[in-house]
Length: 133
Image (tube, rainbow, N blue to C red):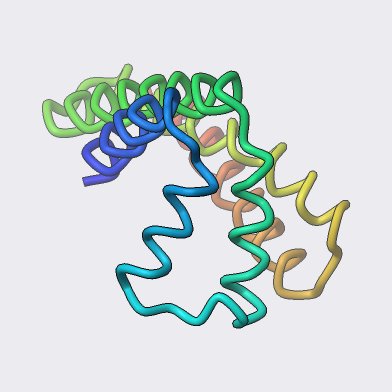
């Protein structure tokens, strides 16, 4: 499921490369009858207006890479292969820097708790993988 959502994200990002993303976002807001005066909708529209084609290419590429990793992980775990377990540890660990950065940017207790929990999960998975023959 994660891989399918990431593939859809990558396709969607690449689909928007040659379009006016700000206008597209305003059309989505109008189509779903969202209030453009709403704080969150307004913030989203403001952020979308700064998106460049280069950034959309980057988002698409990263989405496809993560989709491939999640597919490989799922196939490896489904077929009970050790490399599937390694991919699980790699994916779990690869997301920790993003959580650290987000905690640095906007620190809060819930974010710190999630980071600590994910570090514990990562350490458990890594230690279990190393000790298991």
